[in-house]
Length: 316
Image 1: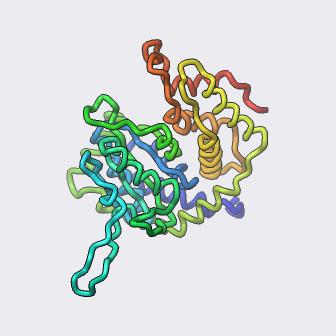
Image 2 (image 1 turned 135 degrees about the horizontal axis):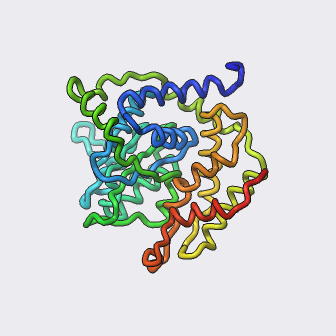
Image 3 (image 1 turned 180 degrees about the vertical axis):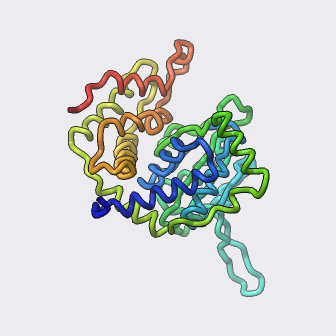
């Protein structure tokens, strides 16, 4: 069994999952999606109320893979240079020295990204799209892993700037952690009675292992029928009732890559339709722009994606 080439990669996934599970009770489904994004080179947008454990999850992931971790609290007065860094003139040697901003890390938690001005948002989103940033005319390469977990407040919060459609597209997936069951919450507060459990998390794999995991995901087999199935699902959302702007081909690519990751996690030799269905909502829904009047008729982006999946014939 373990002679299969993806066995070591799957082992890496299981080690990280088990380690995060020691701290994040009841978040198995969220952890699975998070690691599918990490393993397929995408970024994640978490939509949640404060206090659901997003920072803990980001830190637990960073510690598990022995990665550098930074957190940026987005506020209305945050500037692009607060993210990218800035050159400072040094009197002693009469030279400018570049001070790296928090974007130069492996795992970046961008908290409440919709509270910053669009200009500052786009500084981060350019970095996510390009894997590099240009600061004061000079291009600087980001970390090889560079994985962004951004959080966004539910839009009822005052003083938020919704992310523009083009920028939503930079996130491979969007999902919520949500609240856990009462039993799991009891386990969480019990764990917190003694030492803060995040401090106990030790690395179980290296960042090199994560890059190996990404390489293993890329070679998972994917039939032409299923590629067509993905294109048809994404296409169906473009013509759906209530949709003003559909998802771009970037959605199809993200869906393909994340499904390859899940196939590897589940010890399958190739992608299956069920994996595509499992990921359709978190990969596609946040990219759809609904017509303003759609909400009065009860249409949601999530509902549109679910409906499109239901209507399409599954390839045999």
